[in-house]
Length: 327
Image 1 (cartoon, rainbow, N blue to C red):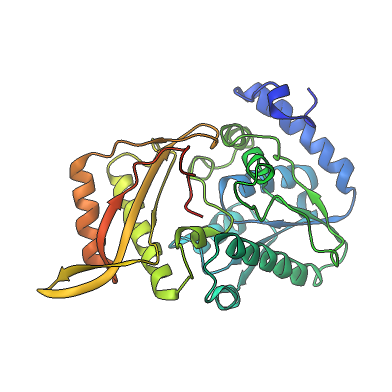
Image 2 (cartoon, rainbow, N blue to C red):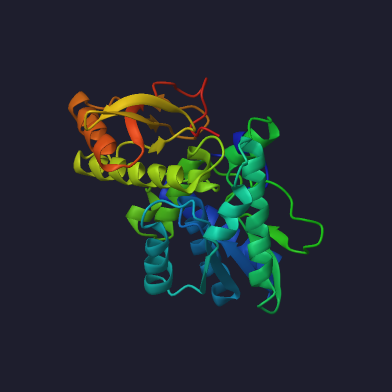
């Protein structure tokens, strides 16, 4: 099969045999593209970048350097997990960069969603450039771009930091081995590559991280409210047996306060929105039916354990009309 055409012209990857055929072709394509040069990969630890990392390790081994940037917009415990899986278990060349202050300082006061995405994306490129200058022979930048990213960028729905060009002062050539795959196909490829199940089937996480789940100008206290409420949601979904059954679930804390009551006193605080959706290709999505008793438990824990939140709402909007993420 030829994989340089649009997905509607190619057979969907639905079996291990098709996944292995795709892997073989991409390994050969990467070898031909890269040669003996070095590649820098933005490794978030999400499904897409993890599959790309495994593909590139298979193709070019230690010519690959993975850079994990902690931009302060990751989920609770995520940087530690990335280091454990990729550095300790997979023996990848992993560079960890804590750029939390750098990102959040640049995002301070910015409330436009597209501007936020561009700041985050551009800052990623700058961080990679700095790391690349410390290495010799790096000529390629690998990215976990997938087909829905490209489609939504072309349609003007939203900008994607991993679906655009590099700044003119950088000479990196892009390596995007899964850019014509849908999310379910990426997972099939990850399975075939032998990645851990909890990595392949972890729910998707956007490149801009919690930045797109903190609508409005990002503040550190509200960002922490998103992080903590998200951790509670993930914990309770795991306990309820929903972790492997719901495609994507997360919390959003918008820049909007409402009056509530805590400890007998007026509490003018944020609301937390829970979103849980099911989809196969991320182009459309249906809402998950969450048991009422679980919702009650989530409301109780989030409003009592997360500072600054006094209300919890459940988003019932499918895609379309809403996108999966908020920004």
